[in-house]
Length: 136
Image (cartoon, rainbow, N blue to C red; front, side, top):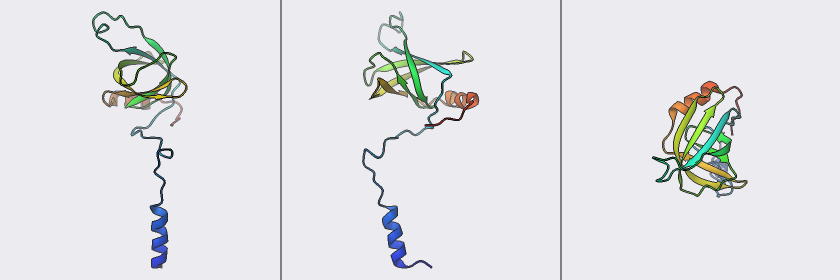
Protein backbone atom coordinates (compact mmCIF):
# COMPACT_ATOMS: atom_id res chain seq x y z
CA UNK A 1 0.00 0.00 0.00
CA UNK A 2 1.30 3.43 -0.91
CA UNK A 3 1.45 6.26 1.56
CA UNK A 4 0.61 9.88 0.92
CA UNK A 5 4.37 10.64 0.87
CA UNK A 6 4.91 8.01 -1.85
CA UNK A 7 2.18 9.65 -3.91
CA UNK A 8 3.74 13.11 -3.50
CA UNK A 9 7.20 11.81 -4.41
CA UNK A 10 5.81 10.12 -7.52
CA UNK A 11 4.04 13.32 -8.60
CA UNK A 12 7.21 15.36 -8.03
CA UNK A 13 9.10 13.02 -10.36
CA UNK A 14 6.24 12.90 -12.85
CA UNK A 15 5.95 16.66 -13.23
CA UNK A 16 9.64 17.57 -13.08
CA UNK A 17 10.29 17.23 -16.81
CA UNK A 18 12.61 19.73 -18.43
CA UNK A 19 10.71 21.26 -21.35
CA UNK A 20 13.37 23.81 -22.27
CA UNK A 21 14.01 24.50 -25.95
CA UNK A 22 17.37 22.70 -25.83
CA UNK A 23 15.73 19.49 -24.64
CA UNK A 24 12.73 19.44 -27.00
CA UNK A 25 14.16 19.33 -30.52
CA UNK A 26 11.89 16.91 -32.36
CA UNK A 27 8.63 18.71 -33.09
CA UNK A 28 7.62 16.46 -35.96
CA UNK A 29 4.24 14.77 -35.92
CA UNK A 30 5.00 12.05 -38.48
CA UNK A 31 7.45 9.15 -38.45
CA UNK A 32 10.63 10.03 -40.29
CA UNK A 33 12.32 7.39 -42.41
CA UNK A 34 15.94 7.26 -43.50
CA UNK A 35 15.97 6.16 -47.13
CA UNK A 36 18.90 5.82 -49.51
CA UNK A 37 16.80 4.65 -52.46
CA UNK A 38 15.04 7.97 -53.17
CA UNK A 39 16.48 10.72 -55.37
CA UNK A 40 15.39 14.28 -54.58
CA UNK A 41 15.44 17.49 -56.58
CA UNK A 42 14.02 20.94 -55.86
CA UNK A 43 12.66 23.65 -58.14
CA UNK A 44 12.00 27.13 -56.78
CA UNK A 45 8.50 28.33 -57.63
CA UNK A 46 8.31 31.74 -59.30
CA UNK A 47 6.06 33.54 -61.76
CA UNK A 48 8.34 32.51 -64.61
CA UNK A 49 8.43 28.77 -64.13
CA UNK A 50 4.67 28.18 -64.26
CA UNK A 51 4.55 28.59 -68.04
CA UNK A 52 8.13 28.67 -69.20
CA UNK A 53 10.18 26.59 -66.75
CA UNK A 54 13.17 28.95 -66.55
CA UNK A 55 14.25 27.62 -63.17
CA UNK A 56 16.42 24.53 -63.15
CA UNK A 57 16.08 21.59 -60.83
CA UNK A 58 18.51 21.57 -57.92
CA UNK A 59 19.80 18.13 -56.95
CA UNK A 60 19.48 17.49 -53.22
CA UNK A 61 20.52 14.75 -50.81
CA UNK A 62 17.58 13.28 -48.93
CA UNK A 63 18.40 13.08 -45.20
CA UNK A 64 15.01 11.86 -43.95
CA UNK A 65 11.42 11.77 -45.13
CA UNK A 66 7.87 11.53 -43.79
CA UNK A 67 4.40 11.97 -45.26
CA UNK A 68 4.49 15.62 -44.12
CA UNK A 69 7.94 16.75 -45.25
CA UNK A 70 11.62 16.08 -45.81
CA UNK A 71 15.02 17.13 -44.57
CA UNK A 72 17.41 17.67 -47.47
CA UNK A 73 20.96 18.89 -47.97
CA UNK A 74 22.00 20.96 -50.98
CA UNK A 75 24.81 23.34 -51.84
CA UNK A 76 22.27 25.83 -53.24
CA UNK A 77 20.70 28.44 -50.97
CA UNK A 78 16.98 28.00 -50.35
CA UNK A 79 15.33 31.07 -48.77
CA UNK A 80 13.06 30.48 -45.78
CA UNK A 81 9.31 30.52 -46.47
CA UNK A 82 10.00 30.06 -50.19
CA UNK A 83 7.51 27.92 -52.13
CA UNK A 84 9.17 25.07 -54.01
CA UNK A 85 8.30 21.89 -55.80
CA UNK A 86 10.20 18.83 -54.70
CA UNK A 87 10.46 15.77 -56.89
CA UNK A 88 11.05 12.45 -55.15
CA UNK A 89 12.00 9.56 -57.43
CA UNK A 90 12.16 5.99 -56.14
CA UNK A 91 14.39 3.21 -57.54
CA UNK A 92 11.48 1.84 -59.56
CA UNK A 93 11.17 5.31 -61.21
CA UNK A 94 7.88 6.13 -59.46
CA UNK A 95 7.93 9.87 -58.80
CA UNK A 96 6.06 12.24 -56.54
CA UNK A 97 6.04 15.95 -57.39
CA UNK A 98 4.99 17.86 -54.30
CA UNK A 99 4.38 21.55 -53.63
CA UNK A 100 6.12 22.52 -50.41
CA UNK A 101 7.74 25.34 -48.46
CA UNK A 102 11.20 25.79 -46.94
CA UNK A 103 10.51 26.10 -43.21
CA UNK A 104 13.91 25.64 -41.58
CA UNK A 105 17.60 26.15 -42.28
CA UNK A 106 19.81 23.75 -40.34
CA UNK A 107 23.60 23.40 -40.13
CA UNK A 108 25.55 21.71 -42.95
CA UNK A 109 23.39 23.22 -45.72
CA UNK A 110 20.36 21.25 -44.58
CA UNK A 111 16.81 22.50 -45.09
CA UNK A 112 13.54 21.43 -43.53
CA UNK A 113 10.83 21.23 -46.17
CA UNK A 114 7.14 21.04 -45.24
CA UNK A 115 4.65 19.72 -47.77
CA UNK A 116 1.64 21.98 -48.41
CA UNK A 117 -0.57 19.12 -47.29
CA UNK A 118 -0.09 15.68 -45.82
CA UNK A 119 0.62 13.20 -48.59
CA UNK A 120 -1.01 9.88 -47.67
CA UNK A 121 -0.14 8.29 -51.02
CA UNK A 122 3.54 9.04 -50.39
CA UNK A 123 3.29 7.75 -46.82
CA UNK A 124 1.74 4.49 -48.00
CA UNK A 125 4.36 4.12 -50.72
CA UNK A 126 7.16 4.73 -48.21
CA UNK A 127 5.86 1.86 -46.08
CA UNK A 128 5.26 -0.38 -49.09
CA UNK A 129 8.80 0.03 -50.46
CA UNK A 130 10.67 0.07 -47.13
CA UNK A 131 13.31 -2.67 -47.10
CA UNK A 132 15.26 -1.64 -44.02
CA UNK A 133 13.41 -0.21 -41.03
CA UNK A 134 15.50 2.82 -40.15
CA UNK A 135 13.64 5.55 -38.29
CA UNK A 136 14.84 8.87 -36.95
